[in-house]
Amino acid sequence: MIAVVLRVHEGRLEVLLASASRDEDALETALARAVDVASLAHVEQLETRVLESGGLATAYLGLARARGDHGTAWSDARQGEGRARDEVELVAAAQARLRAKLSYTNVGFALAPLRFTLSELREIYVAALGHDVSATNLQRVLLRRGVLERVEGLRSPGRTGGRPAALFRFAAQRLEVTDEFAALRPPR
Amino acid sequence: MIAVVLRVHEGRLEVLLASASRDEDALETALARAVDVASLAHVEQLETRVLESGGLATAYLGLARARGDHGTAWSDARQGEGRARDEVELVAAAQARLRAKLSYTNVGFALAPLRFTLSELREIYVAALGHDVSATNLQRVLLRRGVLERVEGLRSPGRTGGRPAALFRFAAQRLEVTDEFAALRPPR
DNA sequence: TCAAAAGTGTTTATAATACACCCATGG
DNA sequence: CCATGGGTGTATTATAAACACTTTTGA
Image (spheres, chains in turn yellow, green, cyan, brown):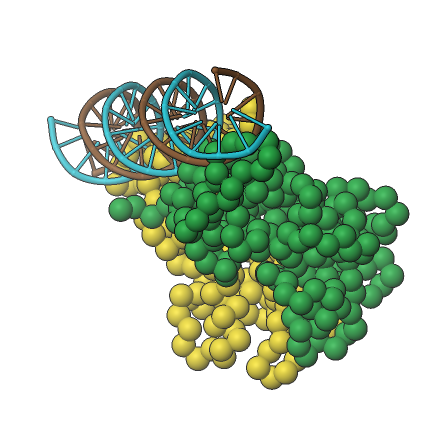
Protein backbone atom coordinates (compact mmCIF):
# COMPACT_ATOMS: atom_id res chain seq x y z
CA MET A 1 0.00 0.00 0.00
CA ILE A 2 1.31 3.38 -0.97
CA ALA A 3 0.06 6.70 0.23
CA VAL A 4 0.54 9.79 -1.89
CA VAL A 5 -0.39 12.69 0.31
CA LEU A 6 -0.65 16.19 -1.11
CA ARG A 7 -0.90 19.49 0.68
CA VAL A 8 -0.32 23.13 -0.07
CA HIS A 9 2.28 24.79 2.08
CA GLU A 10 3.40 28.38 1.62
CA GLY A 11 2.04 28.55 -1.87
CA ARG A 12 3.69 25.32 -2.98
CA LEU A 13 2.15 21.94 -3.70
CA GLU A 14 3.95 19.38 -1.56
CA VAL A 15 3.88 15.62 -1.50
CA LEU A 16 4.62 12.99 1.09
CA LEU A 17 5.09 9.40 0.03
CA ALA A 18 4.66 6.54 2.47
CA SER A 19 4.14 2.83 2.15
CA ALA A 20 2.58 0.53 4.70
CA SER A 21 2.44 -3.22 5.20
CA ARG A 22 0.10 -5.49 3.31
CA ASP A 23 -2.25 -5.83 6.22
CA GLU A 24 -5.25 -4.41 4.52
CA ASP A 25 -7.79 -4.77 7.29
CA ALA A 26 -8.15 -1.15 8.15
CA LEU A 27 -6.87 0.64 5.12
CA GLU A 28 -7.52 4.17 6.09
CA THR A 29 -6.38 3.70 9.63
CA ALA A 30 -3.14 2.20 8.43
CA LEU A 31 -2.73 5.05 6.04
CA ALA A 32 -3.23 7.69 8.70
CA ARG A 33 -0.68 5.98 10.91
CA ALA A 34 1.79 5.57 8.09
CA VAL A 35 1.92 9.20 7.16
CA ASP A 36 1.80 10.39 10.74
CA VAL A 37 -0.84 12.97 10.11
CA ALA A 38 -3.58 12.94 12.68
CA SER A 39 -6.30 14.06 10.36
CA LEU A 40 -6.08 13.51 6.66
CA ALA A 41 -8.96 15.62 5.44
CA HIS A 42 -9.71 13.32 2.54
CA VAL A 43 -8.57 9.93 1.26
CA GLU A 44 -9.50 8.17 -1.93
CA GLN A 45 -8.15 5.33 -3.96
CA LEU A 46 -5.85 6.24 -6.76
CA GLU A 47 -4.97 3.01 -8.51
CA THR A 48 -3.65 -0.49 -8.05
CA ARG A 49 -0.61 -1.35 -10.09
CA VAL A 50 2.14 -3.87 -10.55
CA LEU A 51 5.32 -2.17 -9.42
CA GLU A 52 8.68 -2.43 -11.16
CA SER A 53 9.76 -4.56 -8.24
CA GLY A 54 7.03 -7.02 -9.17
CA GLY A 55 4.93 -6.36 -6.12
CA LEU A 56 1.33 -5.29 -6.25
CA ALA A 57 0.45 -2.00 -4.64
CA THR A 58 -2.73 -0.07 -4.10
CA ALA A 59 -2.09 3.63 -4.06
CA TYR A 60 -4.18 6.12 -2.12
CA LEU A 61 -4.43 9.83 -2.62
CA GLY A 62 -4.56 11.70 0.65
CA LEU A 63 -5.13 15.40 1.06
CA ALA A 64 -3.96 17.33 4.08
CA ARG A 65 -4.84 20.85 5.15
CA ALA A 66 -2.44 23.71 4.88
CA ARG A 67 -0.40 23.97 8.06
CA GLY A 68 2.35 25.98 9.53
CA ASP A 69 4.81 23.17 10.18
CA HIS A 70 7.92 22.52 8.18
CA GLY A 71 7.95 18.76 8.07
CA THR A 72 11.11 17.55 6.38
CA ALA A 73 9.24 14.60 4.93
CA TRP A 74 7.37 16.86 2.55
CA SER A 75 8.87 17.69 -0.82
CA ASP A 76 7.89 19.70 -3.86
CA ALA A 77 5.27 17.74 -5.76
CA ARG A 78 6.34 19.16 -9.11
CA GLN A 79 9.91 17.87 -8.95
CA GLY A 80 10.67 14.26 -9.69
CA GLU A 81 14.32 14.37 -8.65
CA GLY A 82 15.54 11.20 -7.02
CA ARG A 83 12.27 9.36 -7.15
CA ALA A 84 11.69 5.92 -8.60
CA ARG A 85 9.67 5.72 -11.79
CA ASP A 86 6.69 4.19 -10.01
CA GLU A 87 6.69 7.06 -7.56
CA VAL A 88 6.97 9.72 -10.22
CA GLU A 89 3.99 8.25 -12.03
CA LEU A 90 1.92 7.98 -8.89
CA VAL A 91 2.61 11.57 -7.92
CA ALA A 92 1.67 12.70 -11.43
CA ALA A 93 -1.55 10.70 -11.25
CA ALA A 94 -2.33 12.21 -7.87
CA GLN A 95 -1.79 15.73 -9.15
CA ALA A 96 -3.95 15.13 -12.21
CA ARG A 97 -6.72 13.71 -10.08
CA LEU A 98 -6.62 16.65 -7.70
CA ARG A 99 -6.59 19.18 -10.50
CA ALA A 100 -9.61 17.64 -12.21
CA LYS A 101 -11.58 17.30 -9.00
CA LEU A 102 -10.94 20.88 -7.97
CA SER A 103 -12.91 21.83 -11.03
CA TYR A 104 -16.05 19.76 -10.53
CA THR A 105 -16.16 18.87 -6.84
CA ASN A 106 -15.83 20.63 -3.48
CA VAL A 107 -12.52 18.86 -2.81
CA GLY A 108 -10.84 22.15 -1.92
CA PHE A 109 -12.23 21.64 1.59
CA ALA A 110 -9.50 19.09 2.17
CA LEU A 111 -6.67 21.50 1.39
CA ALA A 112 -8.00 24.63 3.03
CA PRO A 113 -8.14 25.49 6.72
CA LEU A 114 -11.58 25.53 8.29
CA ARG A 115 -11.94 29.30 7.98
CA PHE A 116 -10.13 31.39 5.42
CA THR A 117 -10.24 34.51 3.32
CA LEU A 118 -10.68 34.35 -0.41
CA SER A 119 -7.10 35.41 -0.99
CA GLU A 120 -5.90 32.51 1.10
CA LEU A 121 -8.13 30.11 -0.79
CA ARG A 122 -6.94 31.53 -4.07
CA GLU A 123 -3.34 30.83 -3.10
CA ILE A 124 -4.23 27.22 -2.43
CA TYR A 125 -5.97 26.81 -5.75
CA VAL A 126 -3.12 28.45 -7.62
CA ALA A 127 -0.64 26.05 -6.05
CA ALA A 128 -2.78 22.99 -6.61
CA LEU A 129 -3.82 23.80 -10.18
CA GLY A 130 -0.47 25.14 -11.28
CA HIS A 131 -1.91 28.17 -13.00
CA ASP A 132 -3.26 31.55 -12.05
CA VAL A 133 -6.76 31.84 -10.65
CA SER A 134 -8.68 35.06 -10.17
CA ALA A 135 -10.09 35.56 -6.70
CA THR A 136 -13.14 37.22 -8.23
CA ASN A 137 -14.05 34.23 -10.36
CA LEU A 138 -13.13 31.71 -7.73
CA GLN A 139 -15.55 33.40 -5.35
CA ARG A 140 -18.35 33.51 -7.90
CA VAL A 141 -18.01 29.93 -9.02
CA LEU A 142 -17.81 28.47 -5.55
CA LEU A 143 -20.59 30.63 -4.10
CA ARG A 144 -22.88 29.96 -7.04
CA ARG A 145 -22.43 26.24 -6.56
CA GLY A 146 -23.05 26.52 -2.85
CA VAL A 147 -19.61 25.15 -2.09
CA LEU A 148 -18.56 28.14 0.03
CA GLU A 149 -20.39 29.88 2.84
CA ARG A 150 -19.70 33.27 4.39
CA VAL A 151 -18.92 33.08 8.05
CA GLU A 152 -19.14 35.75 10.76
CA GLY A 153 -16.32 38.18 11.17
CA LEU A 154 -13.54 39.79 9.21
CA ARG A 155 -9.82 39.32 8.98
CA SER A 156 -8.06 42.60 9.88
CA PRO A 157 -5.51 43.79 7.37
CA GLY A 158 -1.79 43.67 8.07
CA ARG A 159 0.56 46.65 8.52
CA THR A 160 0.39 47.29 4.82
CA GLY A 161 -3.27 48.21 4.95
CA GLY A 162 -6.13 47.21 2.78
CA ARG A 163 -9.76 46.42 3.30
CA PRO A 164 -10.54 43.75 5.89
CA ALA A 165 -11.30 40.42 4.27
CA ALA A 166 -14.49 38.43 4.71
CA LEU A 167 -14.18 34.92 6.09
CA PHE A 168 -15.53 31.82 4.42
CA ARG A 169 -15.75 28.11 5.02
CA PHE A 170 -16.64 25.10 2.90
CA ALA A 171 -20.30 24.19 3.29
CA ALA A 172 -19.43 20.49 3.50
CA GLN A 173 -16.41 18.59 4.77
CA ARG A 174 -17.05 15.51 2.67
CA LEU A 175 -16.46 15.09 -1.03
CA GLU A 176 -19.40 16.15 -3.16
CA VAL A 177 -19.66 16.28 -6.91
CA THR A 178 -20.97 19.73 -7.74
CA ASP A 179 -20.92 19.64 -11.51
CA GLU A 180 -21.65 16.09 -12.57
CA PHE A 181 -22.54 16.82 -16.16
CA ALA A 182 -20.08 18.84 -18.18
CA ALA A 183 -22.36 18.15 -21.11
CA LEU A 184 -25.22 15.81 -21.99
CA ARG A 185 -27.17 16.78 -18.94
CA PRO A 186 -30.69 15.52 -18.39
CA PRO A 187 -33.47 17.55 -20.03
CA ARG A 188 -35.49 19.88 -17.80
CA MET B 1 -10.41 -9.73 -9.17
CA ILE B 2 -13.87 -8.78 -10.28
CA ALA B 3 -14.86 -7.61 -13.72
CA VAL B 4 -17.92 -5.45 -14.14
CA VAL B 5 -18.55 -5.31 -17.86
CA LEU B 6 -21.17 -2.99 -19.29
CA ARG B 7 -22.65 -2.89 -22.75
CA VAL B 8 -25.73 -1.52 -24.46
CA HIS B 9 -27.88 -4.13 -26.12
CA GLU B 10 -31.19 -3.32 -27.79
CA GLY B 11 -31.52 -0.03 -26.00
CA ARG B 12 -30.80 -1.49 -22.58
CA LEU B 13 -27.73 -1.16 -20.37
CA GLU B 14 -26.55 -4.66 -19.52
CA VAL B 15 -23.95 -5.94 -17.11
CA LEU B 16 -21.86 -9.05 -16.88
CA LEU B 17 -20.08 -9.87 -13.64
CA ALA B 18 -17.12 -12.20 -13.55
CA SER B 19 -14.38 -12.91 -11.09
CA ALA B 20 -10.98 -14.35 -11.81
CA SER B 21 -8.21 -15.86 -9.72
CA ARG B 22 -5.71 -13.86 -7.76
CA ASP B 23 -2.95 -14.34 -10.30
CA GLU B 24 -2.45 -10.73 -11.11
CA ASP B 25 0.38 -11.02 -13.60
CA ALA B 26 -1.55 -10.10 -16.69
CA LEU B 27 -4.57 -8.33 -15.37
CA GLU B 28 -6.22 -7.35 -18.56
CA THR B 29 -5.53 -10.64 -20.26
CA ALA B 30 -7.06 -12.50 -17.36
CA LEU B 31 -10.02 -10.19 -17.48
CA ALA B 32 -10.63 -10.74 -21.17
CA ARG B 33 -10.42 -14.49 -20.66
CA ALA B 34 -12.71 -14.38 -17.66
CA VAL B 35 -15.53 -12.61 -19.36
CA ASP B 36 -15.10 -14.49 -22.60
CA VAL B 37 -15.28 -11.43 -24.75
CA ALA B 38 -12.63 -11.34 -27.40
CA SER B 39 -12.25 -7.62 -27.49
CA LEU B 40 -13.27 -5.48 -24.58
CA ALA B 41 -13.14 -2.05 -26.11
CA HIS B 42 -12.02 -0.38 -22.90
CA VAL B 43 -10.93 -1.46 -19.44
CA GLU B 44 -10.15 0.66 -16.43
CA GLN B 45 -9.81 0.16 -12.74
CA LEU B 46 -12.86 0.82 -10.67
CA GLU B 47 -11.83 0.29 -7.07
CA THR B 48 -10.25 -2.09 -4.63
CA ARG B 49 -12.35 -3.06 -1.68
CA VAL B 50 -12.65 -5.43 1.21
CA LEU B 51 -15.57 -7.72 0.39
CA GLU B 52 -18.18 -8.85 2.88
CA SER B 53 -16.55 -12.26 2.66
CA GLY B 54 -13.38 -10.68 4.00
CA GLY B 55 -11.44 -11.10 0.79
CA LEU B 56 -9.79 -8.26 -1.02
CA ALA B 57 -10.87 -7.62 -4.58
CA THR B 58 -9.85 -5.19 -7.25
CA ALA B 59 -12.75 -4.38 -9.53
CA TYR B 60 -12.39 -3.43 -13.15
CA LEU B 61 -14.87 -1.65 -15.35
CA GLY B 62 -14.98 -3.11 -18.84
CA LEU B 63 -16.96 -1.73 -21.74
CA ALA B 64 -18.07 -3.87 -24.65
CA ARG B 65 -19.49 -2.78 -27.98
CA ALA B 66 -23.12 -3.20 -28.87
CA ARG B 67 -23.62 -6.61 -30.48
CA GLY B 68 -26.38 -8.74 -31.85
CA ASP B 69 -25.89 -11.75 -29.61
CA HIS B 70 -28.21 -12.71 -26.80
CA GLY B 71 -25.71 -13.96 -24.24
CA THR B 72 -27.56 -15.32 -21.25
CA ALA B 73 -24.78 -14.12 -18.98
CA TRP B 74 -25.82 -10.52 -19.47
CA SER B 75 -28.46 -8.99 -17.26
CA ASP B 76 -30.14 -5.61 -16.87
CA ALA B 77 -27.68 -3.28 -15.18
CA ARG B 78 -30.38 -1.26 -13.50
CA GLN B 79 -31.88 -4.17 -11.54
CA GLY B 80 -30.20 -5.43 -8.41
CA GLU B 81 -32.42 -8.50 -7.97
CA GLY B 82 -30.60 -11.48 -6.59
CA ARG B 83 -27.20 -9.86 -6.38
CA ALA B 84 -24.98 -9.70 -3.34
CA ARG B 85 -24.53 -6.29 -1.75
CA ASP B 86 -20.93 -6.05 -2.94
CA GLU B 87 -22.07 -6.68 -6.47
CA VAL B 88 -24.88 -4.18 -6.35
CA GLU B 89 -22.48 -1.52 -5.15
CA LEU B 90 -19.90 -2.33 -7.78
CA VAL B 91 -22.45 -2.20 -10.57
CA ALA B 92 -23.70 1.14 -9.27
CA ALA B 93 -20.16 2.47 -9.16
CA ALA B 94 -19.56 1.25 -12.69
CA GLN B 95 -22.69 2.97 -13.97
CA ALA B 96 -21.82 6.21 -12.22
CA ARG B 97 -18.33 6.15 -13.67
CA LEU B 98 -19.59 5.50 -17.17
CA ARG B 99 -22.21 8.22 -16.93
CA ALA B 100 -19.71 10.82 -15.78
CA LYS B 101 -17.13 9.89 -18.38
CA LEU B 102 -19.63 9.99 -21.24
CA SER B 103 -19.93 13.66 -20.47
CA TYR B 104 -16.28 14.71 -20.47
CA THR B 105 -14.42 12.03 -22.43
CA ASN B 106 -14.76 10.16 -25.73
CA VAL B 107 -15.56 6.92 -23.91
CA GLY B 108 -18.61 6.33 -26.10
CA PHE B 109 -16.22 4.74 -28.59
CA ALA B 110 -16.15 1.67 -26.39
CA LEU B 111 -19.90 1.16 -26.49
CA ALA B 112 -20.61 2.01 -30.11
CA PRO B 113 -19.91 -0.07 -33.20
CA LEU B 114 -17.14 1.18 -35.46
CA ARG B 115 -19.53 2.91 -37.84
CA PHE B 116 -22.95 4.13 -36.86
CA THR B 117 -25.65 6.67 -37.55
CA LEU B 118 -26.44 9.40 -35.09
CA SER B 119 -29.73 7.76 -34.17
CA GLU B 120 -27.91 4.59 -33.28
CA LEU B 121 -25.41 6.51 -31.19
CA ARG B 122 -28.21 8.38 -29.52
CA GLU B 123 -29.85 5.12 -28.48
CA ILE B 124 -26.62 4.03 -26.86
CA TYR B 125 -26.22 7.26 -24.94
CA VAL B 126 -29.82 7.18 -23.79
CA ALA B 127 -29.39 3.67 -22.44
CA ALA B 128 -26.07 4.41 -20.78
CA LEU B 129 -27.05 7.76 -19.27
CA GLY B 130 -30.55 6.74 -18.26
CA HIS B 131 -32.16 9.89 -19.57
CA ASP B 132 -33.22 11.31 -22.88
CA VAL B 133 -30.60 12.78 -25.21
CA SER B 134 -31.33 14.83 -28.29
CA ALA B 135 -29.63 13.61 -31.44
CA THR B 136 -29.17 17.22 -32.52
CA ASN B 137 -27.24 18.19 -29.42
CA LEU B 138 -25.34 14.96 -29.26
CA GLN B 139 -24.08 15.58 -32.77
CA ARG B 140 -23.11 19.17 -32.07
CA VAL B 141 -21.30 18.47 -28.84
CA LEU B 142 -19.34 15.52 -30.16
CA LEU B 143 -18.47 17.14 -33.49
CA ARG B 144 -17.42 20.38 -31.86
CA ARG B 145 -15.10 18.51 -29.58
CA GLY B 146 -13.66 16.53 -32.46
CA VAL B 147 -14.80 13.27 -30.91
CA LEU B 148 -16.84 12.20 -33.93
CA GLU B 149 -15.88 12.13 -37.63
CA ARG B 150 -18.12 11.79 -40.65
CA VAL B 151 -17.36 8.79 -42.72
CA GLU B 152 -18.15 8.03 -46.38
CA GLY B 153 -21.55 6.70 -47.30
CA LEU B 154 -25.10 6.72 -46.11
CA ARG B 155 -27.35 4.23 -44.41
CA SER B 156 -30.40 3.55 -46.58
CA PRO B 157 -33.74 3.95 -44.84
CA GLY B 158 -35.93 0.94 -43.96
CA ARG B 159 -39.35 0.09 -45.44
CA THR B 160 -40.87 2.88 -43.45
CA GLY B 161 -38.98 5.54 -45.35
CA GLY B 162 -37.09 8.55 -44.18
CA ARG B 163 -33.98 10.35 -45.27
CA PRO B 164 -30.82 8.24 -45.50
CA ALA B 165 -28.62 8.73 -42.45
CA ALA B 166 -25.01 9.89 -42.49
CA LEU B 167 -22.41 7.57 -41.01
CA PHE B 168 -19.94 8.52 -38.32
CA ARG B 169 -17.10 7.02 -36.34
CA PHE B 170 -15.17 7.98 -33.24
CA ALA B 171 -11.98 9.81 -34.14
CA ALA B 172 -10.01 7.83 -31.56
CA GLN B 173 -10.36 4.36 -30.13
CA ARG B 174 -8.55 5.13 -26.91
CA LEU B 175 -9.83 7.06 -23.94
CA GLU B 176 -9.25 10.79 -24.19
CA VAL B 177 -10.38 13.51 -21.84
CA THR B 178 -12.06 16.12 -23.97
CA ASP B 179 -13.25 18.56 -21.34
CA GLU B 180 -10.74 18.58 -18.54
CA PHE B 181 -11.81 21.79 -16.90
CA ALA B 182 -15.46 22.19 -16.07
CA ALA B 183 -14.45 25.43 -14.43
CA LEU B 184 -11.27 27.11 -13.15
CA ARG B 185 -9.56 26.73 -16.49
CA PRO B 186 -6.18 28.28 -17.10
CA PRO B 187 -6.14 31.94 -18.23
CA ARG B 188 -5.49 32.61 -21.92
C1' DT C 1 -4.53 61.50 1.03
C1' DC C 2 -2.53 57.72 -1.13
C1' DA C 3 -1.31 52.91 -1.80
C1' DA C 4 -2.78 48.36 -0.82
C1' DA C 5 -6.07 44.82 -0.53
C1' DA C 6 -10.81 43.36 -0.95
C1' DG C 7 -15.04 43.30 -3.06
C1' DT C 8 -18.98 44.45 -6.53
C1' DG C 9 -21.15 45.50 -11.09
C1' DT C 10 -21.16 44.77 -15.74
C1' DT C 11 -19.64 43.07 -20.07
C1' DT C 12 -18.02 39.49 -22.89
C1' DA C 13 -17.14 34.82 -24.35
C1' DT C 14 -18.26 30.19 -24.82
C1' DA C 15 -20.76 26.24 -25.02
C1' DA C 16 -24.67 23.70 -24.66
C1' DT C 17 -29.86 23.28 -24.98
C1' DA C 18 -34.25 24.17 -27.31
C1' DC C 19 -36.90 24.65 -31.10
C1' DA C 20 -38.45 25.72 -35.72
C1' DC C 21 -37.89 24.46 -40.09
C1' DC C 22 -36.04 22.10 -44.34
C1' DC C 23 -34.46 17.57 -46.86
C1' DA C 24 -34.76 12.83 -48.84
C1' DT C 25 -36.85 8.70 -49.04
C1' DG C 26 -40.63 4.73 -49.34
C1' DG C 27 -45.13 3.59 -50.05
C1' DC D 1 -48.24 13.61 -51.84
C1' DC D 2 -47.63 12.58 -47.27
C1' DA D 3 -45.73 10.30 -43.30
C1' DT D 4 -41.29 9.21 -41.47
C1' DG D 5 -36.84 9.72 -40.12
C1' DG D 6 -32.71 12.76 -40.77
C1' DG D 7 -30.42 17.15 -40.71
C1' DT D 8 -29.51 22.29 -40.41
C1' DG D 9 -30.14 27.18 -38.85
C1' DT D 10 -30.90 30.05 -35.29
C1' DA D 11 -32.44 31.64 -30.71
C1' DT D 12 -32.04 31.08 -25.96
C1' DT D 13 -29.90 29.98 -21.76
C1' DA D 14 -26.28 28.99 -18.56
C1' DT D 15 -21.94 29.60 -16.76
C1' DA D 16 -17.64 31.31 -16.30
C1' DA D 17 -13.88 34.72 -17.55
C1' DA D 18 -12.47 39.46 -18.01
C1' DC D 19 -12.30 43.93 -16.59
C1' DA D 20 -13.56 48.42 -14.73
C1' DC D 21 -14.69 50.43 -10.71
C1' DT D 22 -15.83 51.11 -5.66
C1' DT D 23 -14.89 50.20 -0.66
C1' DT D 24 -12.09 50.05 3.47
C1' DT D 25 -8.19 50.09 5.72
C1' DG D 26 -2.95 51.57 7.49
C1' DA D 27 0.47 54.74 7.42
